[in-house]
Length: 206
Image (cartoon, rainbow, N blue to C red; front, side, top):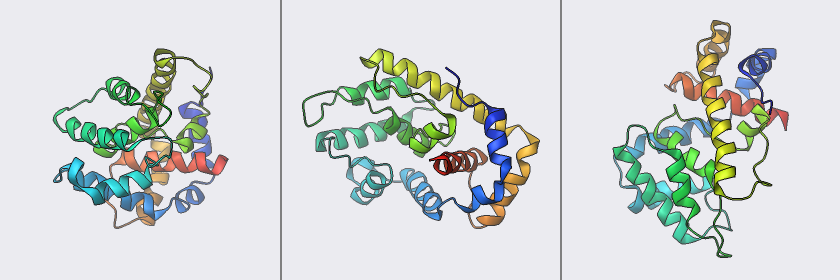
């Protein structure tokens, strides 16, 4: 399967980099900083405000998911505090075992990625905008956890490696410079800036 490469995305990013950066919603920066910063000093399972913001921003309040799933999700998020490199496969597997309203397991890899990205931006996000930016294929038709997980991990690793290439490319420095001009009061890691920019590319393609 051919996904967009670093060179493919580079062309899209440089085509009109100011327009891409200017379209990034300020809310995305505010919410990320809140969730990432507050996590350091809160106990997630008891912090209802934190949960509320997270649920709405990352669409955890999906009607197909149960309250039990939400509670387990935030408990799992709290448990990741002690791990330097959390295992996204194990996290997704744990979430898979919590049944939905119909009594079925559900594949919630994007929510697992959102959890880890909130804790550490070196873990890329995996939402509909990122999927569109990379032109990732759906896992909907694949049956069973293992087949779906294999596809997700292949795509996630591709995202990670692509980000590494783009972050080292000097040709993209004007892009990051404009980001800093657009959002001068926000001190974000470079990888987070890139994730926001790539997501906006995906949003523009829809």
